Length: 279
Image 1 (tube, helix red, strand yellow):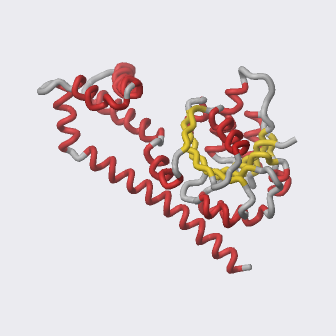
Image 2 (cartoon, rainbow, N blue to C red):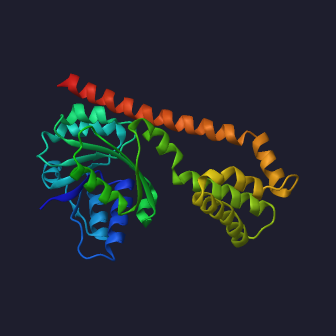
Image 3 (cartoon, rainbow, N blue to C red):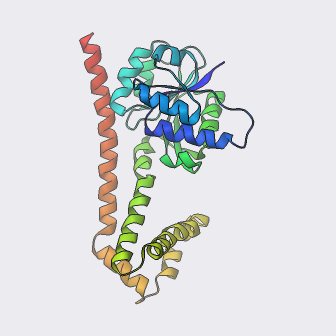
C-alpha cells in the first residue's frame, strides 16, 4: 500500500502533517504518512505528536511513496534527488522548495515522472492554508487530482503559471500579516491603549478590512474611499503612511524576497553541478 512520503521533517512538513491529521479528525480512516529525515529527534517528535511513520532510510521511504513531497532546503533538493535513483511508475513527485524549477526537477528525475511544485502556507497547520500549484508538462489528470486532494485538505489551493510562483511565495506569506499586526498593536500601546484593547483594535482593522475586500476584490478602491473620509482621521493616517514611503517599502521588500527565492534555486543548481563534477 502506498503512502504520502515527506523527504525532510522541518517546519513545512510539520505544518502539513498537523493540518492533514486535523482534517482527518472528522473523517473515517487516516492517510499513511511517512517522513524521512536524517535527524532522529525530528522523526520521534512527528511520530509522537501525529502518528506518522518515521523512516531514517531514504531508500525505504521512497519505496513506500505514491505521493512524494520533497520538503528540504532549496540548495539540498537536487543533491537529494540524485540519491533517489529511478522512481517506480506512478509516483507523483511534488517539490516544496522555492526557486527549484520544474525543468530542474525533470532533468534530475527524467521525463517519465509526474512532477509538480507546491508552495503551501504555514497556516496549513490549522486547516487555513493557501497553496500555489504548478504542474509539469504531461502530468496526468489522476496525478493532478492526488496533488489537489492533498493540499485542498489543509486549506485552499490555486493553480498558477510556474513563472508566478516566486512572486506568489513572497506576496502570500502569513509572516507579513503577523508583522503588520504586531506593528499596529505596538503603535496602539504607545498611544495609551491597554494590551487587550490594542489587540482588539489592530486585529479588527486588518481582519475585517480583508474580509470585506475579499467579498468583492474589484471594490477595493471604493472601500478605501468609504473608510477614509477626506480630511478625516483615517485619511490623515494614510497620508502619513504614503508620505513615509509605505508602498515603496512593500515593493522593495517583495523584490528582495523574489531575488532570494531565485538565488536559492541557483544555489541548488550549483550544488548539484559540483556533486556531478566530483563523481
